[in-house]
Image 1: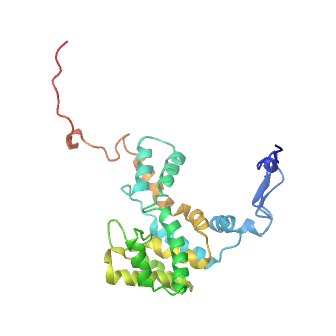
Image 2: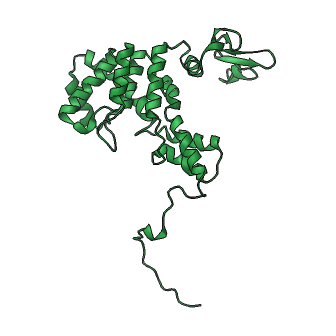
Image 3: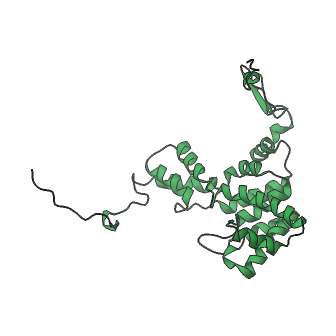
Length: 270
């Protein structure tokens, strides 16, 4: 039996790329543009990141909206799940890079991290298809929940209200970004839950996932773009913990441990 070329054969000994390449001592190419001599050399860092992800320039008003979201979400509280990892790493004297990488890895949590946004964008897009097929929003939401679905971007584990939603929506109105189909859909879902399930009010992830859907971003693109969401809050948590004695971050007294296992046993002497 004659076998054809291996699927990886075309990729051996060569890098095939459309995103860019570095030529040390000469130039660097970033998505077809000279990184040091073309117009992209004057972009700020966030604009360059967005250009690298989406392959096109993101409008400044969209960048401003999400920049504000990141500022309003950067809580320097070491009790938060990902900040706690940064702080614990700091108290063990780990390096900043390792500490923040570990904290960022936890930021992909499916319940309250990046996994929410990935699922929320997909839910909005699918819901639009269903509604355009003639199903009412109430029927769709009830069928989704009764089928075991979880509302990504709605509800909050500690508090029902999300203090960032009103701020983000107000800025979106100011920037002319609040009238997109999916944002209006998100607010309509929130209104339905306000009347039927108050514990499922929209949170900020649900709102800015709707913005992403309106901007035409795929879930994967959106996930990459949101990588820095919690970053600014992690730095102070790491630094403060690193200045404390080793092990001083959330130590537990032995007397505070409640043991409910096998009772102490008396061993016969040897």
